Every structure is written in C-alpha cells, then in structure tokens.
Image (tube, rainbow, N blue to C red; front, side, top):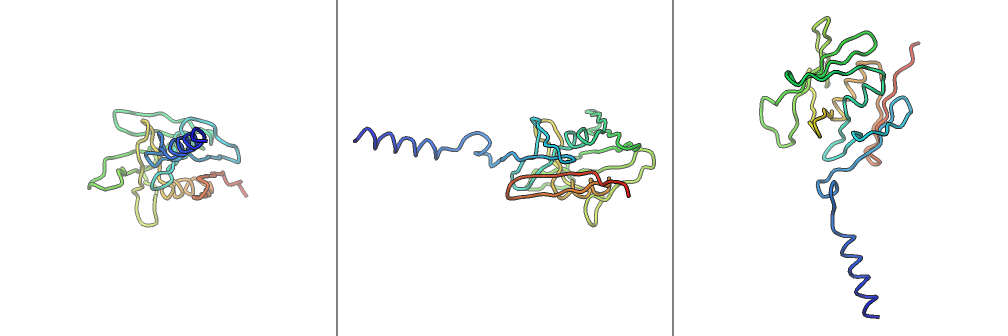
Length: 165
C-alpha cells in the first residue's frame, strides 16, 4: 500500500513539472492556408500574443521568398508584385521584445498600412525567422486580398485567398 501511495505521489509531482516550451509560456498552434493544414517546424506560436511565420505563409500562398541578411529584409514575389518586408530594431525600448516591421511595394515604393493608423507593424525574430503579430498579419494579408481568422482559444490561424469576383 505504501508503494502505491509513493508511486501516485511521484507521478503527480512529475506531471506538475513544466517542460521546454511550456516553461517559456510558448504554445504551438495550427496554421491553415487555403484550407490546407501546414505541417512545418515553424508554425503558429502563442506566447503573450499569437505570432504567424511570414515565410511559411507566403510560400504556402505560392510566393517566392528571398532573405537578405545584410539588410534584414525579405523580398517576396507574390501575384505579380514584389514586396520588401523589413524588420527593424524599434526606435524605443519595449517590454514585449517586439521589432518594428514594414512592407513596401518595390516597384512603386509605397508602404502598406499594417495597422489602422500606421505603416509600422510588429514582429519578433524566433529561430531566425520573422513572426508577425496576429494584428500586423491581419492587415498585411487583408492588403493582399486574403482573409485571416484567428481562434485564440485553440491557437488556430486560417489564411485564405479571396476568390476574384
């Protein structure tokens, strides 16, 4: 009887110990692009916000993505446009470790609005990849004629290209 009690207590203790990503407060989620589940190492990540991997989504949409490490920018060729996506250290310190993010059309030089009132969006570098906040990603993909749905409880993000009418 004492052995059973010790085993039960030990199992409860081991189940309580946090491990790896949970310890950091990181949870992985599911990413769907055009209704297909994207099975890659870099998927949706939830910490204090939901973060969406830029390259993974664009490649799933059929875009070509080139990274220029000298300038910290990604050049994205998508539906006849070339977009320059740039991450920058913020002009001011912030407690969330977010970086500023911009997107401009390479041909016209025009910047996209990545929030209701700003050309700046927010991103994080995670494992040498740009991850956009859900808020920034929603504006970016809306500008590119896509819809984006986020289920924050289940950590699911769905990005779908709108069909031409």
